[in-house]
Length: 160
Length: 180
Image (cartoon, rainbow over all chains, first blue to last red; front, side, top):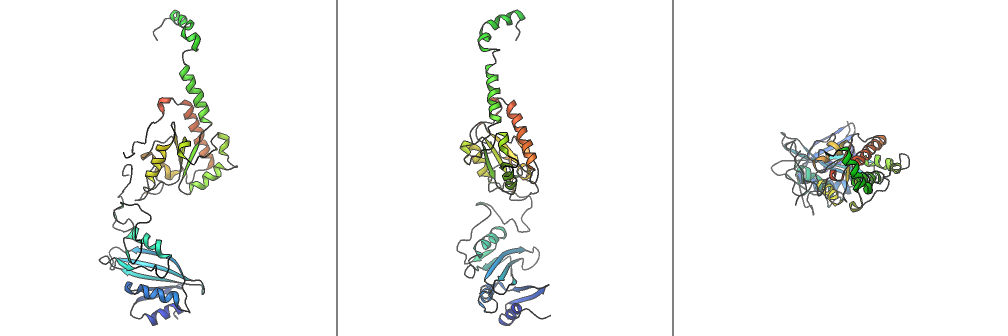
């Protein structure tokens, strides 16, 4: 099957950064090295034939037991060409950091804080990386698969 | 009372002749309770999707005004019925307790919807499993969200309860979980 223009361009340009690409039922996905996330997202935003100018979603996944354990997922949309692409960047537990893409899309601000809040992934270069949904004093990261499912940290009242 | 019939009759000539059956306080209770049950000033503590049902309830179709509780006060200092509508998270719990403590006495609490009542289908790190772990509750209405008829039924139950209440029945002071 012929590759979409997005994946073709990514493959040509970032040959050494791409771990894998696939396009299941037309959903373009590229798995890339986390060190190059800034370069790749900047290219996707600025290339004349792509113009992924809308960062729709940024989230994380915990694949407990797999190495590397985490994955940061970006969903991008090109308003001009009506195209979507999904970028995934694996992040190992030992070095749980990735570059912040706030400099590319300012909208990433709260998404990165959310991923930090619930998964504990550090976004390097984020100007205000602190909890956004949970409260100060909350210990641990509750969407990690090894967070105890019955653990409660109430601010007031009993632990139920 | 240990009084004979005769002595009782004598007593009626004295104090009870002036004060009726010497049950002035009970009668005052009754008339105040009767007045109170038709004049709840509710504070809508609306946190989640149940709020939509609350809006329809307060609107003209179901018309909470018919039961004398149509005037939502957005300051707890002016409210005596706390309507807790929607899921309460652990992050919000201190706020809910603070609002409860700030309300005028006597005060009542209405648990609107299953999440408020028991946490509902949420049983996780974020959710309080029922507001009765934090503050005293008078009426529980389950449902996700409850039908307006259920809420009206709950309100009528609360009115019945208020009608029976004595001054000594009201919870007083801050909620027991309040941190000093």
